[in-house]
Length: 533
Figure (tube, one colour):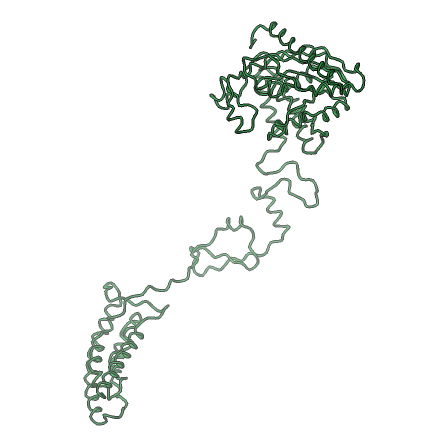
């Protein structure tokens, strides 16, 4: 048991000595790198070989002297631990001096590591010591990656770059270029006075941002800047010049183009400033005059080529009721009648049309209808408009007239219960019959998709020669020739107050207006030469 314990202690001591030798031979971080044994081109390799030759006999002699000493100590005092005798490790000092500084593995010899073992354990540690002694200083651990050195500035910025970057603070230094030598002194730059620096910067135009320089005491901004951006005035002048050239090429007077541009700019200014009025019904006169009517005029004059007759029957002032037939699949005839009264009448009167609920429930269309003067087809709204002296337009056929098939063209549908006549009798305003020829041919209805109409909640879903075959292009109306004729006014003020409550009188006046419009339609159809001419 004791022998086994001593053997274990000897083995542990051997391992400790080998570990201690390995740690001593490992270079520290930041120390000189160790030259590997395989590097034959290293200048320190001859010195390492010489140190190895001188150290090897010293290690062998130390091993021989240590082994008998260990055996003798074990025989005399087997139970006591005597201090071990130091091996003559001084003989390896010349070898350590001869070795270069880059070989730290020669600092510790195996003989010195074996001399530190106690005497009772010398016999068991003899074998590990021999193995340790056989390790030469050349058997160094693998070379580790050296510590990355700190970066060094090898070049300095040029003087021109330093000047363009701005003045350095006082005490700052610029490293001299490498060509100036190691003894070149740093160039010190004194702090520059702000006024001097401002005067020097003013002499360099590439550093200026604006001309003239901005002054915080000036409240108005400069009219011209040094930035490469054109002014608004320059943009407008260029746009007007381009439009003048385009107008001359199209045969339009350049003065008309400039006048239109001035009107558009004035309209935009008024909308931004809020300088416009809207009445109780949502009518926007400025929008109607400047936007709505100009959009309809090309269609009115060049597409349908509307011919107006009997415009003198429209009163110059005061309230009146215009009753017209309704057709065309798309209710565009009401817009043409409204524009005809405004453009052809000497007083440029505005007709306030009464529309169905579906018109004002439709997105975007309802907003445009309100702003252009239309309102709900209700007796209350009509009476309010008559009281204000407005010209009111009504289309009694409604969707029955707009959605009727092409085979029933120019045959008036039922005018309803005559509510418009009752409103005119109550306000004692004249009734003016209006007949429109040409609207029936813009989109002839040859069929109706009832299921689709019920699915989308529409009064009808037309099938025309172009729709839905051509998709959205099928909604473009055909360029038929239009004739709008205003008949002689039918007076209502002769019936006295309370006439609106007489149903027989209301029915008779409704039938009279309907027959007048129907007969006028037949007359106009006989007079026109062609549908499109």
